[in-house]
Amino acid sequence: KVARKSGALKEKVRLNKLSKHEFDNIFTSFVATYQIDRTSCSPIDPPSRPTSDIPALIDFCDMGEERTPILPDHNNLERNKGYLPCHFHTREGVRVASLRQLSQLVRTKRLSRSEFTSTAACPEGDETCYFESIDREVINLDLYAVPAARNFIFAPSFVGEIFELDHVSVPGALPVSLEVMSLSPRVFDVRNFYNLDEADDIVERALNEKSESHKIKRSSTGASGYNVNSQRTSENGFDTNGHTAMTVKKRAFEVLGFDEYTESFADGLQVLRYNQSTAYIPHLDWIDDDHKRERHDFDSSAKGTNRFGTILLYMTDLPENGGGETVFPKAWPSQDPQNNIVLDDVRLVMCQNKNI
Image (tube, rainbow, N blue to C red; front, side, top):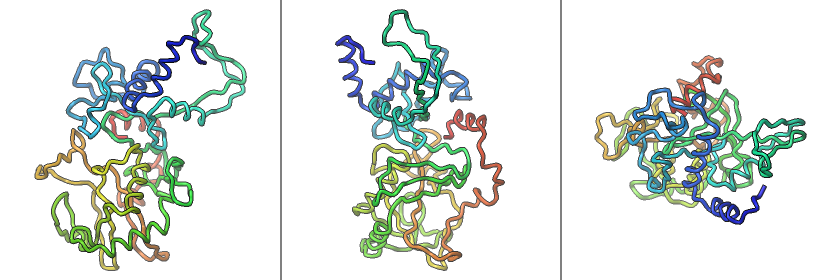
């Protein structure tokens, strides 16, 4: 319903012009006040600050100064009574950044029920507060709250679960989706991410690259410099600014749940070539800096940032049993399939520990 007072109409117009950070602030405050209690997703560990007057969700959203990375948009974050808000995403990773977008999501999530009885207490005579009890459509919209300056992470429940990413566009309008291959570590099969023409263009550019820093050569490891490692015998090159490379990088950000592309967040499109005698033995795909030798802070458990996700794209095809697989030794087949089902209480603990 639209309120009749002109002041309310002006307020509605203003709310529709909120920045995404202002929306985060208002929506976090609303959800914290009216929806979330201590039985929902909130920290297990006692906070380092008094929280007797702070809703559980607010305490979850603001991880504290020592655990909040300073990202490029940090100065744009809107604080609510001194605390940073969450940002909210759909199950498929779409960031909810405006009231208009929220209303559109609600319209697409309608569930029909033959009977609905409201227990809402409306003030007598308030014409804007009422529910019909028969043939009422009930809206069921699940949103995921993500702490300030942290990234959305998919929260799968079982191996084989499908995430339809209708918001990601690819040539040919093919449907992009993720199929869960493993829960721990999280591994997904990405379907219809790109097409053959894009793959051929990336390979051609990589093979024709002449610059010493970007051409195909023996792969290196580490965050800086050129360090050859006997455990990695492949060859690799980079395509950092080609048209197709940029298109694919931006698409990768969409798949991972980012609402904006930020060049400094990307490693660049790395093109790897494996022959029959080359490989990269099992490794963790982030930057180790235990001795603090790098200028950047890679400790992502605190204020630092590190690699968040890797998308592997196969540029050429091989026959069955032709080799070239990517193996996750701690995911399958060593795990019992029963261990790949997350029960509700386990998912809650994972959420409370901020691991998802």
